[in-house]
Length: 74
Image (cartoon, rainbow, N blue to C red; front, side, top):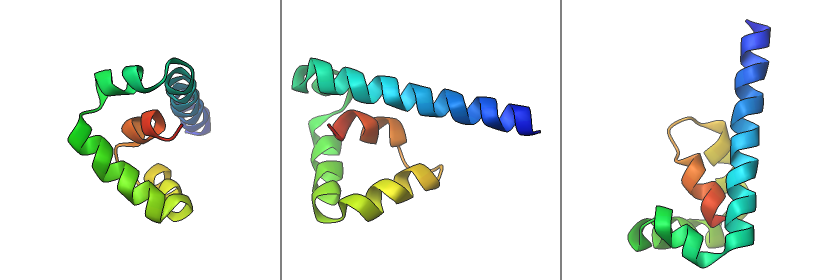
């Protein structure tokens, strides 16, 4: 069980890091290709009001769209 858990965790962490770095490097045009304006505004509003708590909850609970959040955070 532990090897599978660690491999899955490492893959998720690496994938999130890659998406974060791509969004930071390529900028807003890259983000707009993958995230609609409506979704972007909703999550950016949440992040501005409750950034630390919101980001912790996004990665803690599986039902949040953490890939979209990784794109929007930079």
